[in-house]
Amino acid sequence: MIALLIAATLFSLINVGCEFARDVMMMQQNSYRIDRYRRWLSQSGDTTSIMRLISLVVIFIAASIISIDVVWMSLVAVDSLVNSVILLRRKYKKPLVYTPRVKRILAVMWILAAAVLCISLLTGDAWWTTIPAFALAVYVASHNFVIVAVWLLKPVEKAINNRYYRDAQRILESMPELTVIGITGSYGKTSTKHYLYRILQEKFDTVMTPGSFNTTLGVVRTIREHMKPYNQVFICEMGAKQPGDIKEICDLVHPSVGIVTAVGEQHLESFKSIENVQRTKFELIDSLPADGFAVVNNDFEWAARREVNNVEVARYAVTATDEAKFVADEIRYTPAGTEFTMKCPSGDTVNFRTRLVGACNVSNLMAAIIVAMRLGVEMEKIKYAVEHIEQVEHRLNMKRTPGGITIIDDAFNSNPTGSAMALDVLASMNGGKRIVVTPGMIELGERQAELNKEFGKKIASSADVAIIVGRYNREAITEGLAAAGNTSVKVLEVDTFDDARRELATIMTAGDTVLYENDLPDTFK
Image (cartoon, rainbow, N blue to C red):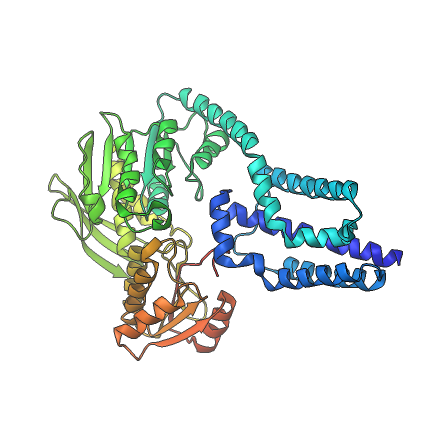
């Protein structure tokens, strides 16, 4: 009996630990915002998952036969063990990062669980005050523990963040000669950041926000952990999910150069309207000093129509060239990448060669080139850097496998414009089957279904095989495919990317091209 009690206790505590870690992981993926986490809970149905429902049944059975120790302990032990094995074996696209904040949240969750158990012991002899049964009950209600822990820690996190923020301010104030370049946009900002960084390295000691460190706290962390006193240029990527986000970053770093790569239908779920997206992205340009310099992509209507009167502005374009000062022309795709010509306001034209592919990358390169020219980088150095820029991972990255398969990796954060450009690249491929693997696009608010249907229509004219992953956008994409009327496209529906890879293994042959368009995080099914 003692051995059974120990086993039930151990398995139930491991089960709680695994589930607490998973809950915090999903809270982390939702930016530690309780409202977004609750929205995910309601959309995912996680509170009523099969695992939790089975555990709930076990709890009710145990409660009714609490006097039969062997039976209820065995039920709790088996259920907890099975749940633990499932959770430990589960693979995540974006696993939990054990930051100090995560450790604080987990510690508070365990303290809360212990406190509830102690209160229960003091107030009565309820059946579930035994540790194994209580732990199983905690597992079933674990979402509440992470929500309460994050809420309780808000003052602590605010105090810590304010201290870090002031330290970042101090570092920037000690570097008055530092040139700060802000980059924002609905799409293309990360690629543009990497391209500009590579070019400016030819002349300046340059630092940039790494990865997707594009929130205020991400920028603060970059300044505190990566910036050195001898840096000459700081390239700061600025992301936003609601109005005021860009201004908050600008109030910290005070950019003198600002790039707006795009204004489009991204994060409409939080922005609510394209007008709010435009207003937020141009918070960067509005924050520039009188002697600042703005670079704006006129290929996007909502960027082109926004007037800029506070600073000098250079508008660039690949397609909407009428009002642009800098224009890309004679774009040619080759096995080695892309060649294009950039027309400058002076009337000069400059030829460029790059390993990158896609009109979107030409556009991103133009923004970087314009800023480099403004900062005085010699043209020969710019051309050399452009020719040697490496593709940014998961952003229209093209590679060829030993088996003769061409892979176009555009898995990061698909959007209406970027996905269309990726499909154009796929459509230009000859010699084998053109295959697209995609779960569709997200965070498009009320236009989610409409834009994914249009995406399906575009797939129909660009691919020979479409593998639709997951159920989140499946109906809209397949409706678009059907509406296009191209019955020659083979459509395969799978639940996971592992299933998609198994399907690919059965249909791929040498000469085929596979486009991976978007890879939804764990918060979507």
